[in-house]
Length: 332
Ligand SMILES: CC(C)(COP(=O)(O)OP(=O)(O)OC[C@H]1O[C@@H](n2cnc3c(N)ncnc32)[C@H](O)[C@@H]1OP(=O)(O)O)[C@@H](O)C(=O)NCCC(=O)NCCS
Image (cartoon, rainbow, N blue to C red):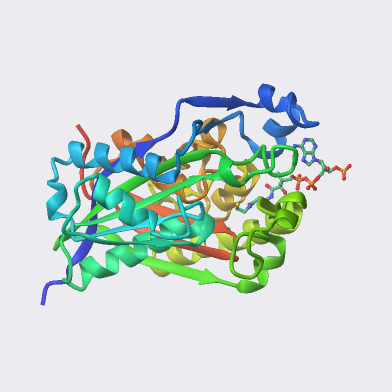
């Protein structure tokens, strides 16, 4: 029987208009453009401003753009998965809000939370539904409004993150393209290094949690850095090795954008040069679940059918993983 693969057949993306520069951050916390640039690679990030503007705003725009580009009737969508850690509300799922807003009235939809690896996990999940023959059109969205959970008096976290969302459409194919392989991992032992203390069922919101500033990202940066460097590089190399890909066979590395130094270490581990590494950290910072689809959106025009992409991510949980995607179409 012919194997069904899940091909990415379209990409969408959206970042909000407001640009928060390193210079502006210098006015908020004790930092410098020079420190942020050399230690992280971030120059500016986008921020979603305004009352009642949740991450769904970003996701809806990304999905609408992708549907228009691919001329997809939203009623044909079977499933929409939204990877995020900054859902509009605890419930309903942001995926439900996005699916309804874009007119995907025949789809079922749910959120998936795996921090910076969220899009990778969601892509693997969505692909499985297509590969099994169960569904024909699956939309996978990754997006976060990190500005909603950042403490803009904490210089160790507020400089890194930004807001944004991207998405892909998955459809079945019998060609040798699409999602080819994935290595996915998690380790709950990472909780102590990267988490948000309050607002969940363990520590619901109270005056005390607000007073103690517990509704923000807590990160032990240098510990997370060490785990990220080792693990993201390892899984990227593992997925390349087990698919017999030498460095010259990899067309693009698509790495999570948490820190330029982590990206460089991963590139060097799989033996590829910077011109083959997708990068948007300078313009968007770390958009958590939004990063990987935003990279695909940024580089879509340069991609050709048959290109080997290694996607790799590391984030809170800890969660991490890497995936081999063979690009399915030529843009233009
Ligand atoms: C957060 C991160 C950028 C900090 O960079 P770092 O080089 O590790 O810096 P350190 O935390 O060791 O701090 C070094 C010094 O810089 C200072 N510093 C931290 N942030 C600063 C800032 N924005 N501006 C100026 N100085 C800063 C620290 O206070 C510390 O000062 P000290 O030596 O006087 O105590 C880096 O650790 C990182 O990228 N971590 C991984 C992030 C990640 O991958 N997350 C997972 C996905 S979300």
